Image (cartoon, rainbow, N blue to C red):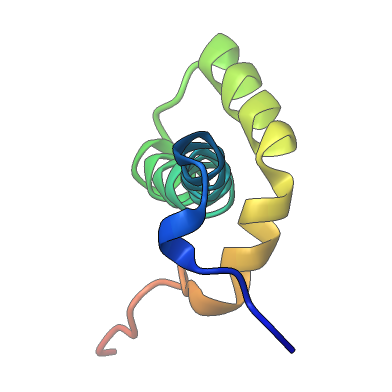
Length: 81
């Protein structure tokens, strides 16, 4: 199997690949992580309009939030009683 020489690729193809990878990483990793931590910080103090916007963003970025959910733990820390 012969692979093409990477130096022979058109720069526009490399630019398109880089753009797809960058936008995919932003959509699946960066924005959902920011949204998770913002929701964690503001959960008890958020207003109704802001909550509506945050839930809308959670709907838009749902695939990325689903991808990150197994790695996040937002349970409260154990208390000494």
